[in-house]
Image 1: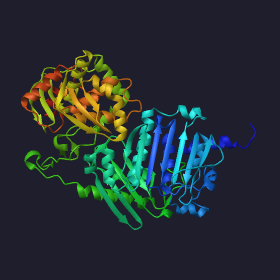
Image 2: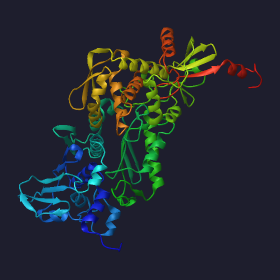
Image 3: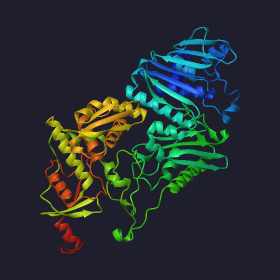
Image 4: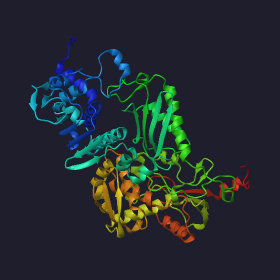
Length: 601
């Protein structure tokens, strides 16, 4: 084909494809415009996860009626004049592409009034075509209403994910900006329900409490560090409070949310040797530096930046976070009576509700440590078998009553090591059983057997337990309540982002209902299409993991014997529901070789 200029319609849609990826992109651009306009209140209304409606209203400076039509044009901006201004950017937006891009793929209207005007003005843009500006009564500020997003780009509309995923992206975005701008009041409305509302009083910890719960907010550690022309403030989680992914790592540079690899690396380097493999902190950090030392014009959505002195920034972030961690983390005492010269915590710390979901906690929130190894789950082993395909195959096998693993013989109890492993003797050698993994397997098979027989007995709680979840997590849990009811849980909505647990399966009597709910929510969050192929098995495995006895929990002889007997009766006793081994077998022949009874070792 001959070379030709693109039509304005095509070029506008190409530009929109870079700026507007999904409904959350629209919310981001409009929210940043509101912040640049000096807004103290930002209200966001969303319908159908942003597909049919996104409305962002603010009380900022507003747009004069004479400039309203120009504001919706491409490359029109009030935030810079010449190219040198690109190296001193102090606003969130500056390219003049956001409103034009949004208007080219939606039905958009902009209503605005400046303080000096007696009346406001409204401009409508349909598929990139602007109508005449009309006068209208309006308060000071701006309201941008975006309807039928991607109506003229059906291919882009088809690539959007589920409503749950798109709403989660919007909530995650706004919560981050709420943390970055604590003096601004944010409000998100999804239909008739308010999913997030902040006071705008400047208290970031109170915002953390509204987002993640009071107990999590109490545990967060404050970071305050200054070096030359750089300042780092914000909050990081202690080593006892972790997540199984990087989604809750948040960095802002000069008020701009960025996803910069070097900053994430510096943060994780600060936690090096303090976290288990596969665990990540919960952080909200704000780096302020001279605008000329950072280039924000290197990514279409301004999500990445470049530093003039990257090594210097990396070192500053790493040292500041590490210093805060060491300042709040006590050094374990030495207990030579138990482990010789090896150190273990002298007393378990009480850290409140642990936001970490997916790894094993011991009693009191601590794990017994010998050298650099941990008594309990091996994260390397879990990582090796944690893919969905392997997990799904094993769970399916367990549900169908089939197993590719041999059973175990009758075992004679010898004792317990480190309050984590049970030692037993069999006819063919010695067995070391991980009590947590073994109890997982026992609970899982009992629960699935009861489910198959449709006879899961429930036990009502003496007092209903109240559980508060972050906004995006509560939405996910609401959609999964039918699955919980199938397994003997009785969970009801009890206010905004709050649930009431009235009963739970008798099999888990004595367990923590809030721990079970939070475990399930994280499992749903990590999967874009949660629990589709192996819905019930995955759910059962997740709950059993959280409510099984933990490493570091001392068991009586009767409890140890009962666990061994139950494990012997399991169909797949050699692995937990997630594929991790429940036991290690040391044969008599192996022992004899180690002691030199059968030749060299």
